[in-house]
Structure formats: C-alpha cells, structure tokens
Length: 179
Image 1: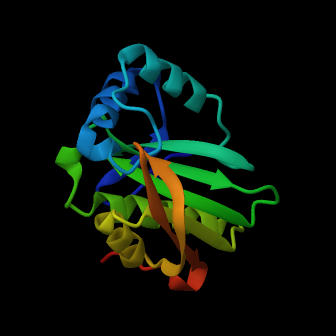
Image 2: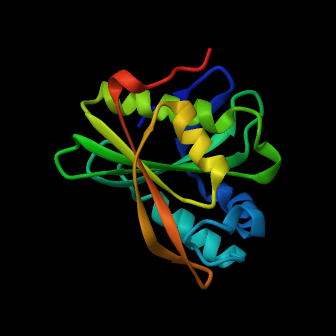
C-alpha cells in the first residue's frame, strides 16, 4: 500500500506506535460524543484496535483505517475509515481528528485525498453518515462535495439517546478539491 500524501498530510497504514495517541483522542468525550465506540479507551484496547487495523487491505472490499499525520511532523492526529463494498464500486468514509487538530482543514484535506484515490481506482459512489446533532460533521461532508440524501429517524442509539442520522452521497464529479 502506498501512502497518500497531500500538501500538509500523510495518510498511511497504522503502526503499533499509534496506539497511545489513538487511546488519547478517542477517549476525549468531545471526540467520542457522536461515535459508536465505547469511551474511554484504555491502552490495551487501543493496542487491540490497532492490531486489527494492521490486518486490513486498503485496496479490496472490506474495511480499512488510514492513520492521519502531519507531513512535516509525524505522529497520529486522526484516522479515516474506508468501507468498500464487494465489487469495489461503492465505498463509505468517516473521519475522526484529535480535538487540537480540528478547524484547520485537515479533515477536508484527508477526505478529499481519499475520495480522489477511491474514484481513481474505480469507485463510482461514496457514502457517509453522521449523527444529525453533529452539525460540524455535516458541514464537513458538504464542503468535501457530499450531498445529503436523507435522514433516518432515531436510527442509532448513541450513549442512551436514539439519534437521527443524516445520509450523504457523492460521485466523482461532485468532489470539491481544496485550493
């Protein structure tokens, strides 16, 4: 697997050294608030999660988790999930950043780069979902080029609350490339 390198970021395969940073930002209540994982995540759980990521195939059907780091300063700042359906013409994306890395355009840059790679490898449609209360995530998806396709009422239970989920979709001609 080759890394995806942008102007400011490197998206790469996870390494075992990423477990402490993963545990730290995924345990942050503001990061975990709209996510499905249980929080906090201790070191042993983070090591097990990363070990699972090491077995994933970025180029085939199934799940792959990219580690996101700054190009000039290595070290995990977030992760980006790709779930490719069998046949590889459809994929789903999701991104998580450490709280101190938000509001700098990194999520937009990472999602755009991965969407570019997916479309270049034959993916025709990319989908994404977010908790309807997560307005920042919905804005991010729209900024990258996703169009909202619907809303599932009380679709997911997050920390004891049945939340609506927004459904998004993008095809290659809708991808917005940051300048």
